Length: 214
Image 1: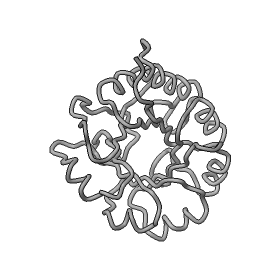
Image 2 (image 1 turned 180 degrees about the vertical axis):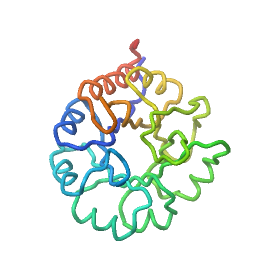
Image 3 (image 1 turned 90 degrees about the vertical axis):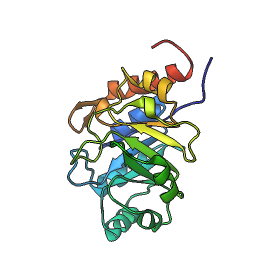
């Protein structure tokens, strides 16, 4: 028996060729990382070319980590982004101030109160649940315990953290997220995407959606 389709975002894309691979394989969104300390950072000019190359109905998501309001606005003027993703310490007022739909990332540290996040960030399109690694802002390759992934939550939930083609089917089956988000799990090296891994990751999600064996 097939289940509802799980949306897929391939994050940390740095060139149009890999964006096209992801889109052709069935990705719903690609992520453009504007955090300068990340090995997946993409300059606004390159990001604009990537976003402009996407086919219809594939979204361009901009990832920010404690960027200034002026910095976010400058990128919005340069890059045609469909959705913003805030991965730092941004408060609700900051996230809402750009008049764009946004996703708020939540590091799944011990004692994290997801209902409090949902209440504070009630205008978010979704919460993205990521593994908590002190000093790092996503893309860690680490997982967290999917058994604690909530059901019947007031906001859509996106599962991230340590996903690969080998474990994403089980993650979808156990957590039943609205979407999955992958970055390091589809790389040949740190910050370097692998076309084959992108394709196989998306195929693994679709097989699980269709109730097919891995």
